[in-house]
Image (cartoon, rainbow, N blue to C red; front, side, top):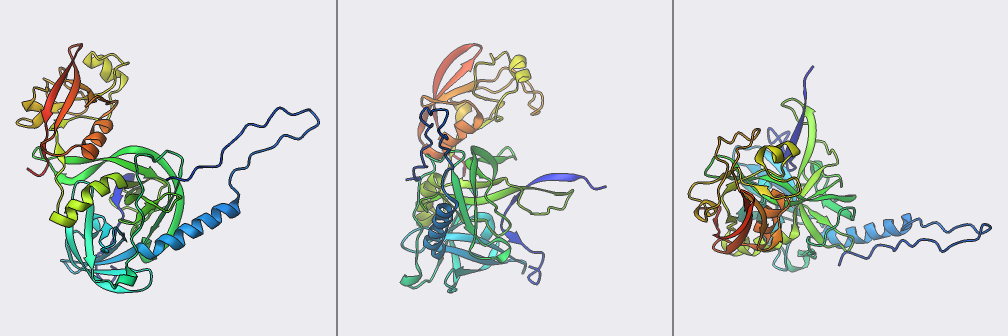
Length: 383
């Protein structure tokens, strides 16, 4: 029997050959007033199915003209497909980097059926983003409205539109399942490991191969994220590439920060702190490291030699770090710029959303039971 493996896959659809190639205010829930024993209590049933249906239809009709299907021919002659959306009035198309990676040719297909050749003008390996241009007549340019991801709440309804399995203009509906998720960046660090992409939105809206690069929308029809990857199961070494209800999207606040640089310069430089950490410490690790369980933060397994953190005096563990038995003696980062750090994801989310290379960040840490704050001058991941 083949083992079942848990896989995290990008959701552009790649074939082996060319042939087979403001968030709207939710209805208020009110407790019924005290009733007499003879009165039937009122029951809150939420938004009616008809209202929900009409809202979804309206959002789709408003936004689908700005969603595109991307058909990619790769350097080796094989092909793939993905999604994207119009980002601005100039018709720049936002998508995922992995959709257009190694592309020899790109065909952009609009909801109207209009087709044009696409050209990549900017890429971001860290958040898996890319900007594509194509020659569209003015009447075919329908940029989507951009929302904000800082106000996204777990449980809110979201919609995804894309090109799964080549079925362009497909709408699916779900909720935000979690915030602040981490995925590997597509950029490799000097230590040989991948950098980390931070602050991703998790959703159970059905997204499948071909959805990559499409918009994740709120109920105002605003883009709050760019769909990037799904977690899926399959036989060992063979992915079914089927939606499992766990998908991830790049938050739009990061996209809005990165996109102008991709359009103007073709790239974006992320700030670099230079530490190795893990998401959170277990109870056993707290005990091993002598850190009270009431104190949370990002434990520094290693401060990369010559990196900004090491230069500022931040220290990692003194023993060999093997990621199972953590080395003792490292600093615990509890805040940055007075923003609490409860886990490594908090640190990364703040870093990539609010800081730039060359900025100074005040890092508060716990060392041998003593709290201290050190200034760190951030470098660039690209260096």
